[in-house]
Image (tube, rainbow, N blue to C red):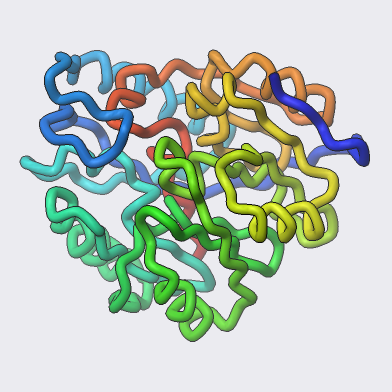
Length: 282
């Protein structure tokens, strides 16, 4: 069940055109296990993953988004999860430095793309997995730690971008990236909107979220378990997992327009809508 907070309000939602980076899952498979979702003993269907990914791509196009593509590389099956490739803001790209060696080469590949497309690149010192753990809400960057990104990367964010960085600690290994446990519905500083799974955070982090965003959508275990929170919003349209029925109902109640999509094959690797989507901010 997904619940709205007692202070929930509804006002006109305005879509803002987004620019995103995506990567076709041409080499997608689950050949190793680095998160609880992955089971390499079970078969995966690359063709189905491509079809589902294309549906997401085409939906973004229909919403008027500008879509950039990075070429997939052989031997990097998780490169489809573009959100982990870095974090961009104000024409600067902070590169990723992956915790697991299986994904290590993705960091340089994405940094090369950023350089070639006009970003000033800040190479990371600390382990971090890009927008998987860094989400912009208003003028603040919400930054996850606990499983993948080191807290030291939060200090790097502060130095590089000069923005407030709010550290949030994740405690449930099934929600190992911030973008699996928290969704930015509206980054507008005047009316910031988020949704999150309370059980994914420690008590101190919950207190921060409750204080900063008292009007949040609180998502229950059933919707979170299909990576319903791994969604992407333009302030009005919210692309979510089609099975996250409770979350969808809460979004409609708040005046958002949800778009359900089936990425079940990519879920086998531990990723959903947001994992496949890196927002570009020149």
